[in-house]
Image (tube, rainbow over all chains, first blue to last red; front, side):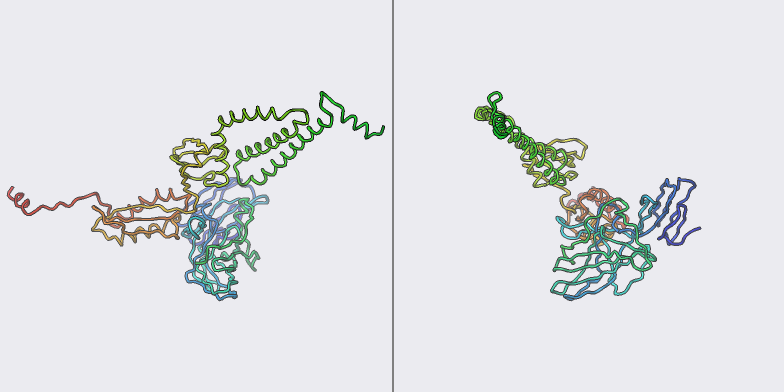
Amino acid sequence: MIFLRVFGEYDLSTQLKEQDVEITIEGKGKRKSYYRKVGEEEVKKFIHAEEGKVVICPVEPVNLPKEGVAEHLLIELDKPFIIESGFKDTFYVKFPVEIGVFLVDKKDVERIDIFTKTKPKYTLYGPPENGIICKWWKSDVYSEMPEVDRLYEGIMKIEIANNYYEWMEINKVVFRAFDMKLFYNEYAYMHATLTILKKTFGETTFNKRKPKNMKGAIDIYLAKGIKKFEKKFIMELGFK
Amino acid sequence: MNIWDSLKDVLELKVGGITVVNIFTFIFILLLAVVIGKMVRINLRRILREKVPGATLVAIEKIAYYGIIFIGLMVALPYIGFSLSGLLVAGGILGIVIGFASQTVVSNLISGLFLMVEKPIKIGDGVNIGDVSGVVKDIRILSTTIRTYDGIYVRIPNDRVFSSNIQNYVAHVARRFEYKIGIRYSDDAEKAVKIIKSLLEEHPLILKEPAPAIFVEELGESSVNLSIRIWAPSNHWFSVKTEMLWKIKVALEKEGIEIPFPQHVIWFADESKKILKKK
């Protein structure tokens, strides 16, 4: 049986096909073969597993093309968002989707593969001497939940509060991947807040509450066994 | 005779000319020095664990621990009749001798401590110290070890590290590198810039911001020279640099833009032409 959607939980022998993404896990006994194709890119691996399930879900979008380069996501707004002093508002942006394939059993979560359909790009937030290398993505600003190609982009709801005494123009928002909490069903979803405290100073955090009819994605840092200490991100190098 | 008097008598008893109370004081001061030394050692370990490399931390701990015991011993020795004045004279002379002999060691030690405080380099950084380039493998109390890019182990005394010009290639998160490419005078430089721009846009490790800069830098003798300035994460710039130059060359040639050989245009004067025609 071929499943026609990628996100979800599957048995250790399974075959999936959605758009140009194909994933096959097959084999008898403990030895399985894993095959994944996205566009022209193919990956083959062997898995030694007796029991468990395969979970395929969106992950924090900072792992590809090279792990360890960035731990932050910078979303550049296609059109600046201007907000009056003392006001709150909500808007939506799109973020790049990276998809993780995990082997989950009672004891552990093991990452098998991460892939993306997006074209990754890095950028620098701030000056070279004290800036931060971030994964870059450009998004329009939507006042309502936009339509997305779910294997390509996810939806991020951003609640913005301007606690500064002047009007503020926001051109970019930076998020710490450590703090992200992803959910998914038909599409990948995150709920973030941006609080502007000073002219070039604000903080971004994530709402961890699971929305209705959505599943919590596997946290890639917890899957790696990395303990999370720092949470919210302080944008101290401005919003332009 | 009550119990206090008998205790007093015992304490005032002399063993080899030293009272029992003095022997106890000597032992007490030594024990106190050991306890203080251990406390300082534990606290140093706790405070410096994240900041100082393992081997150096052990050295600092030992210096502090044995230093405190040495001070304790100096304080305690007079109680057992050991004259410090003689020891100081002997120690002074010995100190001068050792001082002369170990001034390089002390200089390295102090430089090592300053390097740990100032932190111009860290283990794993790609650096150039004086005439040595490579990756820092260890920063010890007396020396710094570097594995050169050729894979050779180099030990540099810390006083040389401290007094040398240090270039740390990864101290900043991003760095810039540059290519210079010449194209023919007959080629369209604007088209070449466009081709290179779109090629750089495709590469994930070429930073979006600061954006790459591509411009005509010079009208050279044989070519129109383009300058291409690219920013990349400091830990990955070299792989990007080695990868992109050839890709730029291939992309330009694919669009009919060529990198010319050095050339000279020779003009003959009219007289020369006539002579040539006659011939």
